[in-house]
Length: 305
Ligand code: ATP
Image (cartoon, rainbow, N blue to C red; front, side, top):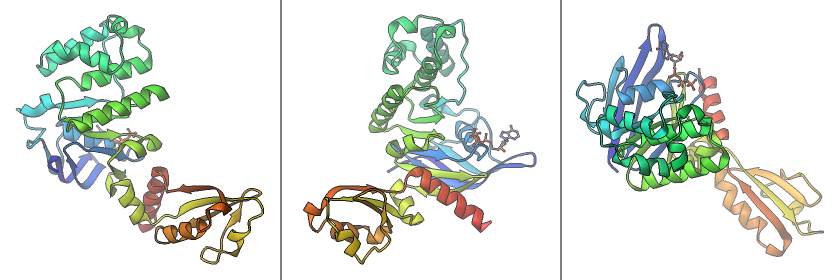
């Protein structure tokens, strides 16, 4: 895979505040990467560095082969950005707003109707002033604005805030389509549960430092957090109580037992539990979530400090 973004050893200081310290990563073409971290962890600072709005105090940033902070950053037209708080001119209609941003980006406005359609702003809404829009509609207009000019790199800051569950689903479907067409997407968000299904990779920041970078599967392997297994036995069966490989079964219902197992022991335990399928009425395997992994990496970092 070709990297669309290469960040090498960047630091950003605002006076005495070390907003970002020694961070390196790459974003590959057609990859959705989630950038997660507490408030003030440095996520927006990284997004601003990628946009070339600010310069790093140390290190280098390359976006589509160029320095985004250089005055003549030609590929700016191929970058899309949705800020955390979208502020539009309230008197303009959705259609006029897109035309305004297209002119700023110096691109043709002909894609505007299709983009409004794509983000689900119907024709009727497109010709209404933005002041009449709900929060979710403004957020969708913000996304349409970010998609102007078919960006190769899309930077999204808390993109699903204000969207209801159905719109969120639609938004993630749209991201899937963009990924398939080779767009590189960096998604900064606190909505960890949503990111779990959509992100190819997760970057975790803490106090300006990158503390984890990998696919959810690779982070699970590194974290070595246990998998939860819940088994409901068919009535009257006692096979779990006889099992020696995993003695710590906790009874959580009349015929339901739960235990935790390491990744290495998971398969052998499942084989043992399901050796006689007739004994098993229900089986649930719960892997560590992104929430669990995030808490784990944060706690490990704090313990090491
Ligand atoms: P949030 O999730 O709250 O949006 P964030 O991870 O995006 O937070 P940043 O906005 O990047 O965090 O801020 C990182 C640190 O840099 C914070 O301590 C913040 O106060 C500080 N900071 C950001 N911009 C400036 C600035 N212009 N001047 C001084 N300090 C700043």
